[in-house]
Image (tube, rainbow, N blue to C red):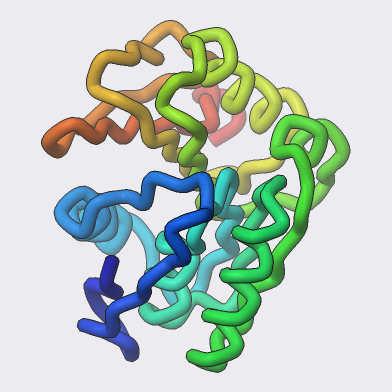
Length: 185
């Protein structure tokens, strides 16, 4: 995998083969960041990277200037790899080794963007639990965005606060937004 843009553009990162990961493809990552760049000043946001695996998405945000990044994964090897890679690039990425669902139940901190890349073999119910916990626990800033990556065969359109999906090859990103009523605006 490589960093697509920013300060570390073009840098290749090679994860150990033993890690239980499936990194987001460069093509899908580039498309996602084109969408995000049109909506946010990337260097002025808070990011929560769930099921962070190799840290691929966290590195991309850091390379583009995001300073407030938290990466959560339950695998010790993944957390160790993210810490080592972030240190080698002098990126300030905070890592938390935890079960993502338990983390979401206890967390109180809001974020501008929450990115989740759970295992593709999750059931629709397991995938849907992510937006449910994010919105129930008010973890997204008012104009924030939850992005869940999944297989093109998974349909999350019935999940809490679903907005839309975009597919790139076998990867699909489903987007979830805070619903704001007219009275609140």
